[in-house]
Length: 163
Length: 395
Image 1 (cartoon, one colour):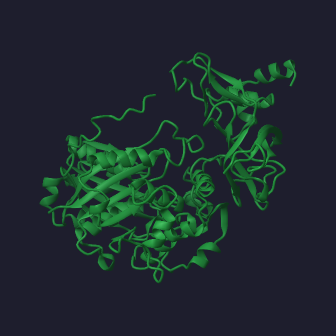
Image 2 (cartoon, rainbow over the protein chains, first blue to last red; image 1 turned 45 degrees about the horizontal axis):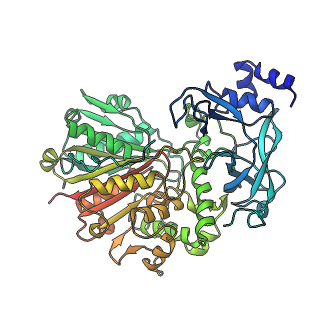
């Protein structure tokens, strides 16, 4: 991501931002996160005073009540905490429920219990498990960037979280 | 924030001061009924008021779920109310609000109701009914990767299986018990018994949960009269006293952020309810753990203290009749005798409350638990919706 592209994503108007993410919970408190998506940056709210991360985006820090919360880029690495496979669900571009469609909630490395939910690319049902180590990737969904995960180390392998 | 226990939490001035005077239902059907929410709810409401010997003019409080209280007041011609509310589901919220309003003197006689209605959030086939399509309830679908609502329970079921290594049969004991019990409930939507093979072979919806792990979308309504213990004692049906009420949630109450299977809304609810209630497991005659999803029920068994975390399935295995599939704790305590959300129908808890009231009134027909005096209800799920209620028969 170049500096120029990042700045351009920041200039997207509120109206345009809503149009790029139809049906998503885009509002005053989450707009920075979605602007980050347009620039392929996964932004999670972090307190500018005490440093605590929180998710989903809130207008104040739940730990110290500071309103100095800053949407801050995370590495996108973490460990699968919850893992399910949808055999049916809401229609979405590129989503095939016959596969079925994996959904994982990932414990991000930045802070224990700080979690982000998305799908996993290039992994079938047998290859996505609680405890897997994952890394961030970006795909296109309906013309908007979607942060997704890729398994980089299976649960139970060397260095992975033990069950 | 501090997790210090509130020393005043066992303060419970409402104990035995508020009562259910009656409960009624339309019964539930697993299809679009061709009726409005208001039609179903009005029927149950008129039924319970008549059973209690009350007229519209006796009601001065209205508390419900999807149908706005002012709409219900207008439909039933209730002349004047001094209190009304529409808390969020599940139904423990309506009970907590109505009981508090009566105890605090905001009103004396509350009509409380819940409508179970097939809507897009629980069944897309609801949209085959053009009037439902046009009712403004269709909404916008979330992204597939949202854990909001029912998906969240499936996700935590995956964690439960990961942490405890239990077989899927453990979830099946919950579904089979409900279906076996529903056979004796004329109001239930699903009354044909199921076997473990049926359960294990059910269509997968969201792995690891399948169709028979999820409650049944239904049309129907339950209605209740909640009033002072004194007033209830003067009405025709046996009064059921409210012993204690608790709602519970933790700071991380979003589905994906919830701390763990060892700290969520159920744990707060149980701690608060135990502190306030006058009885607990040893003195319970009938148990109503919520069962919108089988995983919720397993967790309630563990968190209420019947067994340890991860052991609910083994506990149920030891306390069930393999021939009938019915659970009878210690050979004595039935579990969701009406068939629960999985078989009577997805009532968001109102069916559990109605059956508890009927059991304690001695009006549960062929499902009657002999000499039922005390009921424990643990309603709702893990996140922002865990609720508890202890009820007892008036002496």
